[in-house]
Image (cartoon, rainbow over all chains, first blue to last red; front, side, top):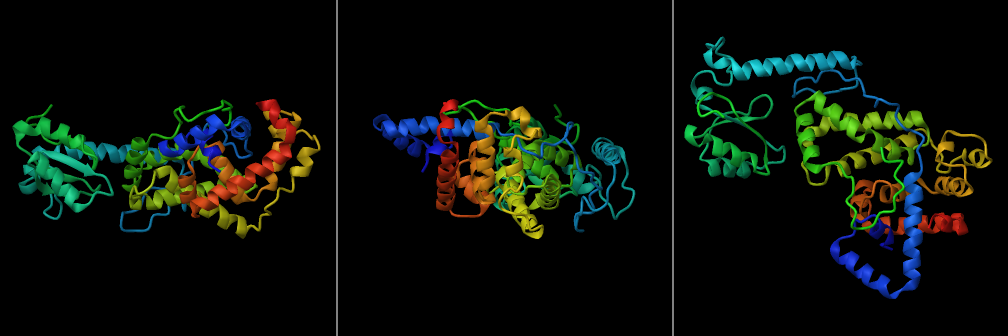
Length: 193
Length: 200
């Protein structure tokens, strides 16, 4: 029963060991193994009728709607080029926000930019946790680097934390090594790389 | 993507599964609405999904439609992916459910009505694969299997997945996967009879 998965190498060690032990003493199964390998090779080599044209066809996507709204990506067909241009513009805005705001006054009290005034000014690391991270894992991560949460979640779900400036390089390295951390970057100049 | 692979693999050979860390990074970005990450994910899975789906729904236009529907779900629900299974398992499971629903909606036959035509020796796009008798027999034999049996065969032999992962994708017990594979292999080997020895 397990021969196909022995041939494709997905059995766990115990299953594979049992099967291999049996193969050493069963000529019939050894012959079966050869036939199984041949069948696997033939099926794997079969072409399918739906081979995508080259270059790979991409769906045309529309810009994502605000997070709260349902997002029907394919509902409105917008050429890919426009979408990518929009993303480039969005990336430029993010870069601007990350680099410039420290010297910018708060424009409107209704908005708070990373690095501007009060809480955000105190943060010096931005951290993005894996989507499946539990709250205790976030606390654990902060505890391990002696960090204090100063802002977040941001629109992208990231958190701004404050760590001791002198320890920041080590804290960043430690954060980046954590399973639940997708991204950890410095966001101001003190103790920068 | 991998249709040209003909090597005979054993347990010790590393398999070409998508890099799990890279998958996690991409789906995290997709969950945040990153279209570029989505496109990267789409390109990564497009070919494998097309192959998988072509064993479940017969018409190429339907394969394309189901593939797009599948990836739309990935885009819309990327943020809800919890990492409880591999990303590939999650995506293939979505594709399987979509395909089975599409097949029902379009009242697709389980058996391949074109098999007889192809077996007659008429030129077909598959000619590059080989016009030998054994290839024709295999194609016919595969077409005679149900979509569920074809899915297990293809996921095992081409996509090189373990039976537990296949059970997750198809939403059935592992014993069902083993049984389907048992009957599918018996059917294929009977149809190929002595011709299989040419490949050994």
